[in-house]
Amino acid sequence: MNKMFLRLVASAAVAMFLVACSSETKIDSDLYIKGAPDWVNEGTQAISSDDGRLIHGVGMSAQVGDESLQKSVADNRARAEVARILSTSVDAQSGDYTSASGGVANSLVNREINTQTQLALKGVKIIGRWRNRDTGDIYSAAEMDLDQLEDAIKRAANLSEGVKAQFIKDANLQFDRFVKENK
Image (cartoon, rainbow, N blue to C red):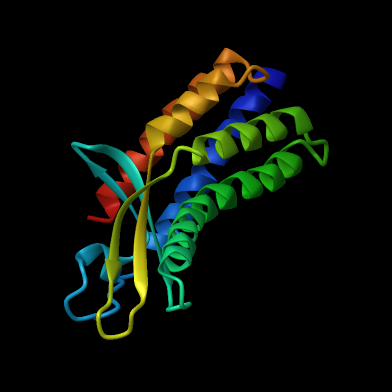
């Protein structure tokens, strides 16, 4: 019973993660900023390519009088976009887990998944910046490879091997399905 319940929790977490991703990328996004790179106009999205299974977050900062600070703000906002997608799924997973267990939540599993997700977020990289010459706004692109999240879950000491394997299997299936549906 407990093993099956933990699998349900892992599946719910993966499903919520991908629902969060899909709500971000199903919307046709184009800011119509002339001369901007595609990633600026398209915004935050999930991508499956030869480079891996990636989440791209885009952040912007208006002029603040200090270019270094402006870049830092744009970078942090791009990282926050990636974190928002991941944290939405983890937070929702807690609610699903509590509901599925009749109100009894396994806080250890929830805490461990949260901790490992936060560790994976530390690996988010800034992969590009662009300055709008007309406005002075700076845009930053952040990237997270889902393999980082998988690696973090594999390292989770307080999750059973079965829960880890189920989480990773469901994540792969759901991400692939999501990308295919949104091409």
